[in-house]
Amino acid sequence: MQLDQVVPFGRSLDEYIHMFALSETDLQKSILSVADGPASFNAEGTDKGYKIQSCDPLYVFEAGEIRDRFYAVRDNIISQIENTRDSWVWSYHQSPTALKAHRTEVAERFCADFHQGKQTRRYIADSLPKLTSATSSYDLCLCSHFLFLYAEQFDTAFHINAIAQMLRISPEVRIFPLLTLAQAQSPHVAPVIKHFSQLGHQCSLEKVDYELQPGGDKMMRITRADECADACNDK
Image 1 (cartoon, rainbow, N blue to C red):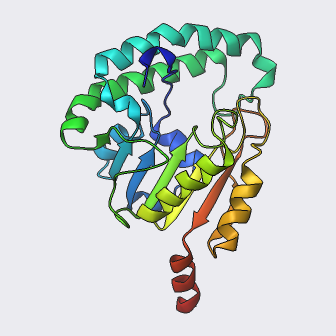
Image 2 (image 1 turned 180 degrees about the vertical axis):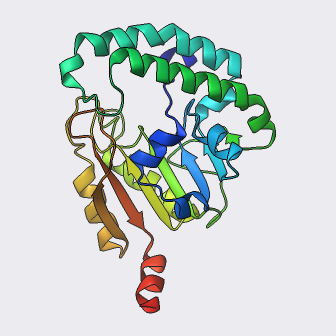
């Protein structure tokens, strides 16, 4: 990974709750958050006693390096959003100025927690499409702002292999958003649903209470086939 090619913007615990429709029951599970970047989800969740582990190739760097890169790109990104403010939804973040303040707060919270979290292996330098975590080692796997978003950079095969890895280590996967950087639904969504449905996994697209990109208010939920069978047997 080249740090000068990364835009390290992260999201908060409250954003994750909205993006992934996380209930209090969900938050009591062991969670792996993939491609987490400089999110404060882990730091804030750990303070509340949640069992969260984050992985991202960004974590090979130190907190100071990640912080410096954040500030190097922040104003330019926010300026681009400000110049196209009518192309965004301001129901959660009330304005580009509020978004900038929130992203800065999140980055600082992450950086303050990163060194200790890295020592206790809450932050692991790992990346899709192949994760090092043991099979069935988590209850829930989340992926924010990576899969589907970078549709031109990563093809359908990459998405299928990446999701298969997450299903290997967790019985349930949730992915948000389903739009590309061009704010269109990712072309990989339909073939991913078809592939995993044919394998017997339960797949759904669900509306959530979070939207910044217009139309970007849906997540994908995939439940592993063995878990689907167990749920049916319990009924």
